[in-house]
Image 1 (cartoon, rainbow, N blue to C red):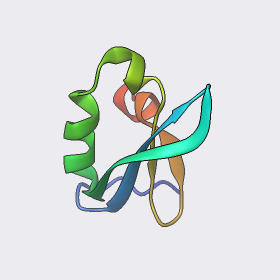
Image 2: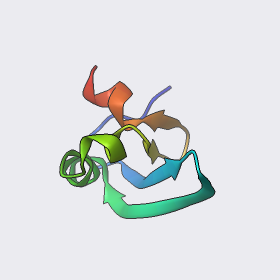
Image 3: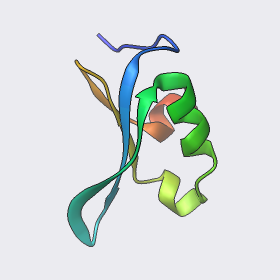
Length: 65
């Protein structure tokens, strides 16, 4: 089950096909993480992931609903 409430604690990170190490951009509530993700360039957004305590989901999956 996905955690989708605004205050859910998440890690926002970026995965790049050329670098196997994830770059963390933000730790905090989901609503703030989505704001940070929306500010990133489109090519970066394609590699953004959100991790909760029980799920990992692509930013674009959430954004496109």
